[in-house]
Length: 151
Image (cartoon, rainbow, N blue to C red; front, top):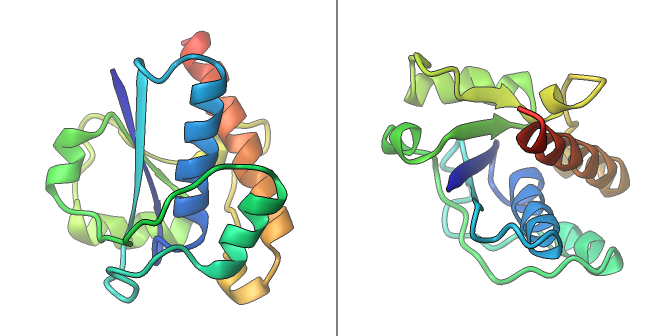
């Protein structure tokens, strides 16, 4: 079982969207018994809050199923629990390293590292651009699945 933790600042936009997008892709490919996903935040600002309504609207528009959830902060124990900790941007990695200072197993990466154009997924909380965030997340998740098929 491969276990993936998607991480962003508040766990109400990008990482939550990534969690449900990846779950949908996994389900459609019949890989639910092989890959498990979850999401978390580097900050404590949104702990307990559900996904941001514009993120839900974007998933609705794209017919991606989701459930009510509660934002949580990443913990040191998550490093041992998950095989990959995938951040949305460099800022998330910097903040994650305050919680998990060492990465001896090379588990911490950006989601877009699994694409032909590594980089950051901009935060739609600030930009309001959920379309671009969605497209970037789709591309990253597809690249990640391809990586698992061709390690």
